[in-house]
Every structure is written in C-alpha cells, then in structure tokens.
Length: 400
Image (cartoon, rainbow, N blue to C red):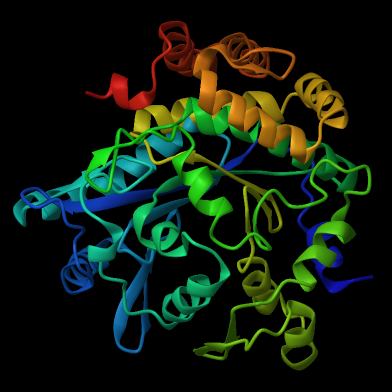
C-alpha cells in the first residue's frame, strides 16, 4: 500500500460531525492601509505569548503560537491566521475566536492598526507588501515567479476561510471530495467578500479563485480526477507524488527541492507522518486532502458569516441525503463544465444558467438542503445567507 494511501485511511472517523476552521485576516494600518510589517507583527505575537502554551521560532523569529484550542500563524504577507481545534459545536468556535481576538484587537487598536475582513488586499498594491522572514515562503516566492502569473498576489494579497470535514471511509471520502469540488463555485460566489482590491474597485467576483488558478496550474485549481469515476485515495496520492515539491523540510531547515517530485524526495527523506504532512501541504487545490477534507473556497469574512458558512458546510456534508444528492449531480459534471459555469457566472451573475437552473435558485436550494442536516438552533445561522441570496447581495454589501 502506498504510504499516502495508508495515511489517508488512518484519517477515517466514524460518526463525526466535527469541523476544523482556519481564518486568515489582513492587519492594516488605519491611516495608510499598508499591512503591518513583520517587525511590528512579531511584537504583537510576543505580546500574546502569555495566552498560549507554545511559541515557535525560525531563525530567531517568532512565527506561530499554540494553545490547546487555537493555533496562530502568519501567512506570507503578514496575514494573521487563526486555526481552531476540531469541534461540532459552532458556538464553541465563536467563543474560541472571541477569546483569541480580544487581546489582538486591543494591541492593534493601541498601535494604530485594525483587522480587515476581505478576500483580497483592499488598499495597496501587493508589490508594496513585505514578505515575512520565513525560509519556506522565500523559496515558494521564487518558485511561483516562474510557475504562473499571480503567485505573488496569492501569497501577499489574499485571505481565506478554510473549513475541514471528516470522512468515514474511502467511499465516503470519494463522495464528499467530488461534492466539495462540484459545489466550490457556489461556495466561492456565496462568500465573495472583496469590494476593493489593490486600491481599486474589484470586478472579479471569483478573485481568489482566479488568482489561485494562475499561480501554479500543476498544483492549484481542481485536482484533475476530482470528478472522475477513478477518484480514490490512490488517485490523490499519485497526483501528489508526481508534483514538484518546491521546498524540503530537512530537520529544522527548509531547502529547495530543485524540481524533484514528492516521490523522488521521499526516496531520501522517507514517509514519516511529519514528512507526509509537509508533502501534502505543497499542493493547493480548491479542495485539499490531509487526514480530512479541507474546503478552501471561502473569502475572509467577519465571524458571524464564518459561523453561517460553517453551518452550511456541516448541514450539507454531514447529511447522507445531501451527500447522495450532490454526488449524483457531480457524476454528470466535468471540470470543463465547471470552468464554463464560472464564465457564465462572471457574465450574468445571479441570473447565470448553471447547475441546471439559474444561480440564485441553485443557491436557494443549496441553503434549504443544508438546513435539513442541522438542528433548529443551527438552522438559524443560515438565515444570513437566505437573506443575502434573496437580496442578491454579497457579504461586503451587508458589512458596510
């Protein structure tokens, strides 16, 4: 058995309804709109150390903090990311987020900065943004300069919300993976939250999606067999193994992989769980696999919208009727068809003829189906999206 396949099999969890949540944020100067530089954000992290059990350093620079519920890390352009422990309790996510953000917001306000919720950097050109001092990001930046046109934007000009779900076995994984890819455009459109990008009005409702697709096509966008009958743990593993790795974690050091594939690197460095986690982190499809399924479709958005989105994901993917319904639809779809849907949505927005209907009605049906998979209290979270769709609004129009 391939080591990656064995790793994926070990991730299967029976009867789980839990979610993992990661929220990236822009930290911007209130006056200039420039992102907080690393020299300043490192001071923020040091001020937060008493609230966390562990601090992680690279070449003397603090890069992460961790407690038993929360992991705080930095993205390449000093975007602040909060990741929370798996839970099926949406109210618990709200509490953890509030606890983590309270000292952050106090520090930022005292120093003239603020948290900005947007999928794309709203204020200044990404060329003006300082990359943090982290070897992994230095090597990735060099790689993306030759792999596509928009890697620098992806690294320093985007912020997302990732929600992860569990699978019970390989068959459940295949169904949910196809479903997540099939619904990716709907999630992306529904959570689109970029009014301005690089100081000008944003005209791309799929901004982050577009940036990712033009970053490094061999490792971003749709995993090639996402909707194929041949999809399996082995198919995903084979894809990962044959993509150039970019960087190698050699003990405490990060070095260039020199265009070697994951499989070639593993011949030297092996298949420990730590190395496998690194290998899997070097691909960036819209839906990524670790020992769970990571749905990477949503823009950064305020907490109340994050919770609504978590409820949507939970109601859809942890209801077997919904999984069967959307898996059956995905069987009749192709990645080329999804690209066509994207073009149609860009042209006609809410009236786009997609998924066998018009976009507004498709979104209404998706939200209604999600409610069937939730308890009455959790169903209330979806009222925000119901109103959004009925008014044909985007989140940034609700957040003015």
